[in-house]
Image (cartoon, rainbow, N blue to C red; front, side):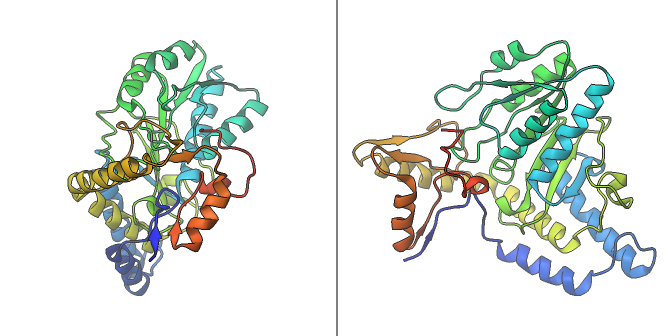
Length: 335
């Protein structure tokens, strides 16, 4: 028996995405920036992938920027909003305590540069209250960044309500949607999202590729300097095979989202029910307001690493926290 239960860390690329990657490596190997025919064909394929990503986010193709993944997108979004804020004399940022480290570490770096950061607490189920975000906002607040769905406990935040608040206050709103994209319906216009990060390998696409959505009119500065790719916002030759594979995986995920949600949510709930029968077990996160593919549970008196090793010996792959901090001995900042 072999069970892979670590899809929050990464997913196996779907067959269709893998086939697209292989096809593009063989057929569309040109540099999209080249003016010759082979390059221009690659450019057309790049823009087709951009249009697919935009379609399922309800964005415009010109608002989609390809990156190496969610962490890069988070960094670029946050540093861009901070740079704009600094020019206006606004150097305060609001976030939560249970963000991904790509966000938290970027905020820590900005603090060393003179920014003030307010990290709002969440309730016992990991949900932040919109009124607490509102209380944290100041006249000099330049950015609110709140994770769409948590990568450890799967809790979904009230993104639409926070987006409406930020729109009213005229503050840039960014969300790390890495764990939500491909698993939840995302409408950046309806949710008043200014900037959004996602990563292909979280929804059965290839690794090393992601997207930063940036609403038209919102300032975006390059994180990587060099060539004029991505409208001068992200230098470096685009990884077209990976981008196309991600777009295919995103298309499949969104076209089958309703069926997926029903099926996977039922499996999630069944697993929670069965595991909860074990004495001294505790389910972490909200039992209803969570992504379909997440179960986080702990057992009193059982050390996480030992349990994972035992599971692995029995053919079950799982994790006790974020894959990005798997080498750390510190307890989860989320739990």
